[in-house]
Length: 297
Image (cartoon, rainbow, N blue to C red; front, top):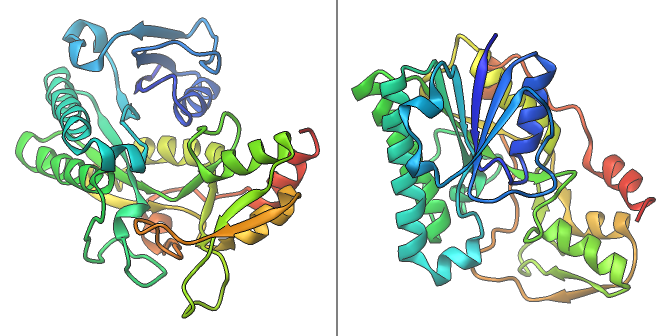
């Protein structure tokens, strides 16, 4: 039986990875500093309430795979707190890589972000030059390089997944989609940022990827014999949807505000590398899922 350790187990994506692992009959260890309602309850899951930097070799004995989901994720917060978020995110990633090396795990999978492509033209390809425009993306990029170096220097198999706009059950409250849905519940207008005059679209376009599809991508990466050398893989759909389409599907009044300087107007994944390396394809369409979801609000 395989065993997976998932850090940040109280977060948005981690419980879905846990469910996928359980569906395969794996044992799961979840690590987080807090406990929340969306943690999966199952006898095959062991939860450790701890800062992951305090983990010991005994805690990850016989672990095959690690999904390192613990990260300070909010972009505006990282802009306001560049030093503390840099320390937290990079320090804990390096310490976990070191522990995984000593424990001789089979593969370490790190979730990066498509936001670090910045203002490159779409569709975004993994080989594009990277110029992070805020601390969060820079921290993710630094950890990508850390994973690559670790594979080369310490012979630990690592993979990096650049995640696009994730949506789904237990959505993080600081995402645009969660804010839109909350506005709908409260009967308030949905706020959309406008694009520049040069754009053909009034609102930004995003490559939305369903959280359970993302969870399956993590498992596929762990099981693939084509991954493990610190490679970077886009995890999206390759399809863009405007934020205005999202707002209209949710329903209600819409108001527009100027774009913030850390936002890009469009992102879209080039999926060729992903499909070459992984036995995985995204299945769920965002507008169809959202239409079904808002019916129950």
